[in-house]
Length: 113
Image (cartoon, rainbow, N blue to C red):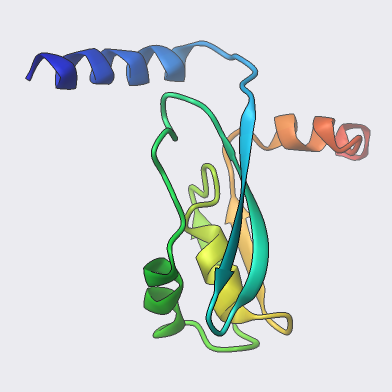
């Protein structure tokens, strides 16, 4: 119970302060989807989130090759990526993120917004 309270306080503090975090890149190869790399932010809000083949198989039930899907509250993309794998190269998945400007700035696109 004490660990739960500590973790809860960490998450609340992480939501209140803007910080820059490092990221971890992992390699994956799912049957039917192929090989890809996934970068996740090492934040208290996203620690421990992983993408598995089960996630991909789950979204494949609902999203077919070529479909359009939207992930509202995409956060670190742990839902967006399996959805995109299910939609395939002919599909499109849009992820709505609250802190969009950080990503745009890192890619040099902030001035275009």
